[in-house]
Image (spheres, rainbow, N blue to C red):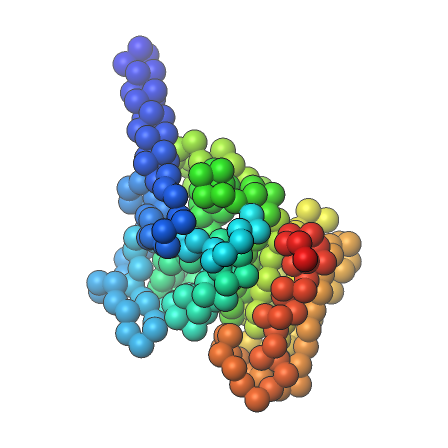
Length: 302
């Protein structure tokens, strides 16, 4: 028993050392940090080595977060970015680094999460019907872990621990809804002191999210909205032929029913996967609306 106690203490010490070695001052720019001290939990096989081609990353088995320091005045707010890609790839430029460029220009710390893909959600993780109701457990574990790490290091990274939000696109938008509604669900065994922190985001932004509505236009039961779900911003085009406008409509209705502060913007045109890149359609101004919304809910000040 004495040896077991000593072993557990050493394990806790190692976890604490790992968490502390991640401390850095992001004022100089940005750096990439592994989010797990060893092998990630629930690791799944992938078809080959990690690759990045034309702004898309796949075969991610070692998830990382890259912390981008804000430019100019630091508002104290932070946003974790979940790129989309159907849980098969990550659109790391369109829905990742370009998003961070925008956020840091507004004085917001940006944390870009490279979560595990392909995860083949909706097939591996459960025997749900219809098929789009399952969830990517590894991706959600990575998201929860990142929120806890950012909150754990908030002081060192000059972040207000009560102003940490998430933004996601397409499949990443679904991941936004998952972390917003499943923060009391512990998916993995704690690995260090950071895992004592909450994984609940303080605010959430989902842009053309997917997988939120069932085939009969009811809410995906894997996103159990409650009054504790954080304030949420939604934006989608009515001519989105990939996920469909009902994804946002169903989620919006559930948030309203639970008395969660929510703002939704629907546009006639814009399609899917437009990111922040300028188009001829009015939907291209959605980042400005997010900035106004963040001031409205008190995350940033005028």
